[in-house]
Image 1 (cartoon, rainbow, N blue to C red):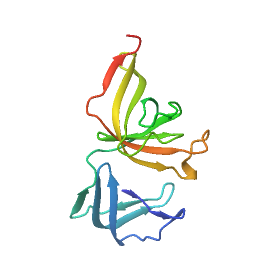
Image 2: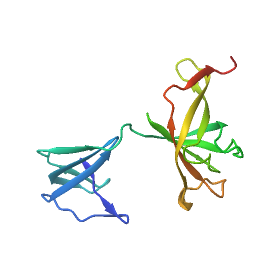
Image 3: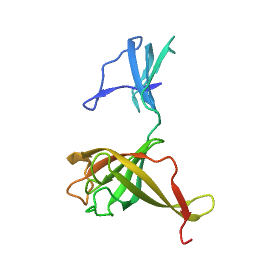
Length: 172
């Protein structure tokens, strides 16, 4: 079962029995297969049922899946000494890196930064502070459609994370 593809908000013209080439991204891989449309269910959600393909190809694209998030992050140390330390948040996180959005760039590519996180462990209800060293891999200014509401500019800093974060219970 797949959603019927859309172009400019309109569903594409498909018919039952039509042969289609499908390419899907999921987690860390792109999957492709050929199949026929068994049935179209256009109301209420625009779904199509496909016959099970005889072969599915997978192309591994990433080492780790990304998780979208909106977690506030403190800049404990920045590669650029003039960086304001508030107004940043994690945009996504994976096993190999993170994307940090904020009002200014955190430093040059190759610069080292230290990120701080405060959160509550749901299992024990303990307040935890964690710090993570990172190296800046990429910097880009985010386009107008994705700027934060309270900031005239927004920068995405892609970082590779060090393997072992430092954890501590808050107040200890």
